[in-house]
Image (cartoon, rainbow, N blue to C red):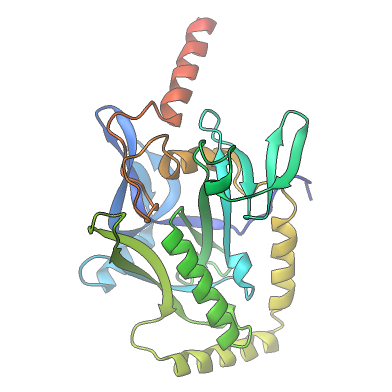
Length: 304
């Protein structure tokens, strides 16, 4: 196994409640009030829709605000990883990642382990745009037992709610989190920071039409069938934990550039708690994609 390379769950698609759109020649993040499932392929119009996006919409009247899911792991912290992150907007690479106690920071001499006071109390990360950044991997559909969809967010509401639900469901099910039939739900709320307008965050619950008791019974039966078939959930969790710990940072360089563009814009007027896709500042400086395109153009002109 290559050291320094985080081995993360295989991803076959993305789940988002926002997108990046082009306005006045600039690519800017924009919020949405429903889920969208996409592939990992982009074209000029953005991320291409995944076939499950259409099938789920046909099964749900109105907007897509719930998605049936299962977890990959019994350990809540393997399904949802949340950290404070500061990205270099010129390169799209993470330069400081912490948990509120300790952080890994890129310095001239390598990676330094330093105290992490969180963005509000950090003179290094606070002014630079350090934010909470969460990644949730879930299984959608039956196409691939290990292939997951990733939901990324910088929303305190989504991270806090998902973390609590995962811990509670794990405890209630007797550590059978991966056997529970659950669903992601989009919820709305208003705060003074959102100026009383609705903001949306992601929650996790029992699937519509079922009860907690029935879901727990089904999970116990599924767990027994898996063990009978030789499925080693403990071994899977251990392998995943080892894979995450194999790298310094989780996101690869090609993923990080897209993450910065969508979740870490350089300047925003929107200070609401949502954060899943911030409302852009109309007069904001050029984004990462624009900077990279300018550099490529300069290099191309030099080569000519």
